[in-house]
Image (cartoon, rainbow, N blue to C red; front, side):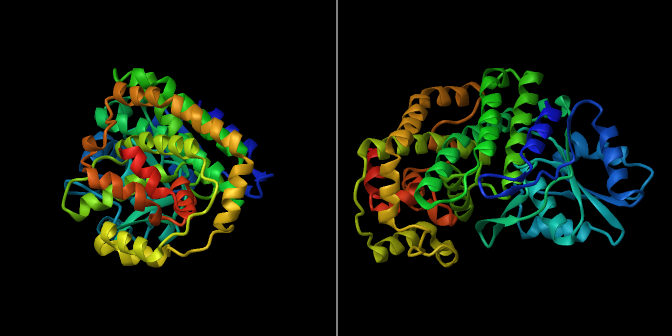
Length: 437
């Protein structure tokens, strides 16, 4: 399967009809019991006898970090073990890793999942060193990505970073992950349904580049994960390995496109909004993939309501009223996001052009939205079977958190999604009211 993934990516490399030039830079994907030998071989190929810095947290050090360091014996190995309860890719963790990179370091090895990978990848990019990752949980799809979501001054901002030279793990390591992390991985993957629809919507409404080949990779990755949803509840080795490979394939799709567009739409914006709000009020944040899974069910409903309504005109938006709403929703973070993504930011097309293009493609888009809505109960069942949450309250969200996210989370990124389209057309509030009625 791993070799098939790489072959699939290599077949898409080069200039594409979508207008992009795709590049796949990850050298190896290996999920097997001989992962230490592969780590040793990759280190030798990437940095010869140079020093290696291994980055882990307290749990992942026990799971695979110590074994990774042992596999690298015979060379200088430095270790950075991030300590503390709830870790994030932020200035603190990035600073700790930067301080642990010695003058002789020639390779970084991340041992972990989301926070460890995002932090190490960001540092590797900034110091100009290669890195690879030993995955410890099938909890998110960023293993093979080349961007890092980072918490900066309380804001979740996605930064350009670098790709992993290799993604390594073993079924034994992955199956040792807590069940909630396995369920989170499935939640993250099910979010690709709405992310892909957002991408296509943007391509039609604004002319954004859309690659059917990469979208097909994403659909394949989601299909792999869906077929294994039931087996995840029993921690079946084959199901967990398949989930992980689907997650890695998702990351490769992002790497090939050069951004997170194939894997992240407004369902991810809701997740990031909830995380920031929970951190602001000192509430422990639930897993990212858990929130994505819950958000996906809401966005499926939003798509259903939008296409049932068929907006055919632009309703003027009161920007002063919306700015006040954004400031109330984001609190101390509002100024930063309003500066990065102004409410009056012009898209490549006007709101009138957007609605005309959407109406011209209405039947095809509605058919996709309807098919996804028909699958909503199945998506909910998959999340439940894997042990994942399906209701906002299960991820620590209050009623106002859900409403504020649906109305305001699109401000997080200058990325066109269903929520941004509904805002531009002046019907966002009406549709949100219907969804939450």
